[in-house]
Image (tube, rainbow, N blue to C red; front, top):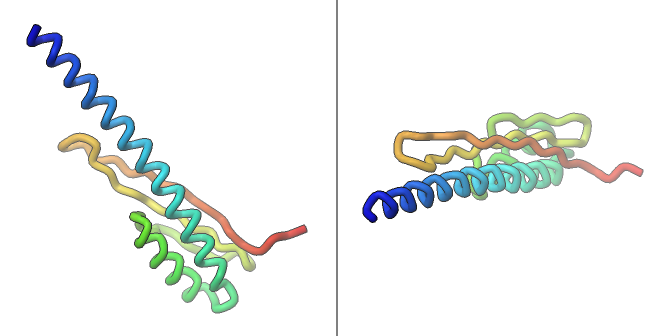
Amino acid sequence: MLAVGLVFVLVGTFGAAVAATGMAAQRAAVAADLGALAGAARAFDGDAAACAFAADVTGRNGGRMVACRLDGLDVLVTVEVVITPLPGLTRVAASTARAGPVRG
């Protein structure tokens, strides 16, 4: 009976680790999207201002901006979120987003 209980605990722990990793990937995507939108709002102010504002918004959303650049009026932002789903196991979820004016 103890072995069956241990199996349930291990399966539950593994499931929680997989779910936490998926949530980190989603958090990275959201932080990248919001950072790109924020940077695009400041694209007319130049590369430094746009990327600084994008980094601020990205950090406030739980991510760390690792790359930012302007492509015309588009802002491309890459964000990483570090997660430790199990003790001793660290993973990095990354996402890239692009934002700019509407083209028709």
